[in-house]
Length: 273
Image 1 (cartoon, helix red, strand yellow):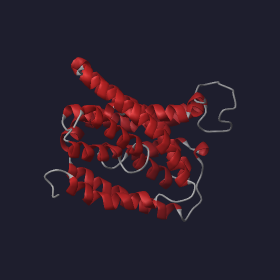
Image 2 (tube, helix red, strand yellow):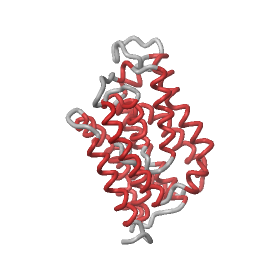
Image 3 (cartoon, one colour):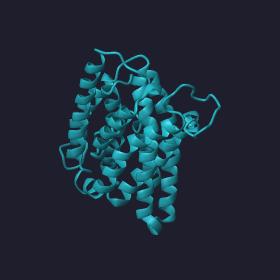
Image 4 (cartoon, helix red, strand yellow):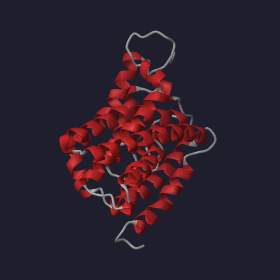
């Protein structure tokens, strides 16, 4: 298949799955195997197109990010724990565990966990985790994101380290963490979006640094197409996801993961179908 067609397909997959709790990395691994697009270049491409998804968050939540500027008084996000230095500390605490774990565990993860078996197991385990989290929050009151404490931010950051295992889902891990630590569904999801930016920028920057000048002009075009597609699709996916959360629980995503786990395994070349 033409590389640009592959870029479009993977850009759609990335945009649809990055910010919902179904594991974008898991979907990209399986899609890559089905398309015959695997190896170091494929792994680097998968990370690079995340830049488009990151940009969608920066666009949709620009007022939230502007409110993080210390001593800025413009009423963008009034009476919030995520303003100025207080907000920066919370995002830093939530990002630090994942950055540290990613730095030290990057090579091990790429070598041992980017496999259909590992992804399928993580998908199923994450689905069960979402169902358990939903059961816990149904029995207690929950807080919005603007009341987030430092302890909650750090706890969510620790949950985020679980996402180093492809298939767990970074958004899934952080949303589950947010729910278990007292946030409501919308707050857990939106804080997950915000703390995705530093983690994904660090991961993407690391990959680009490693690639260096090894990227050809045609590959650069492929990366650019994937970037644009993932950006546009992620804009739509985030808005749709928040509308879903306003009406329903996360249970449908959990059951999707549980059903998808064996299907993904069987669809991967050499594992059944």
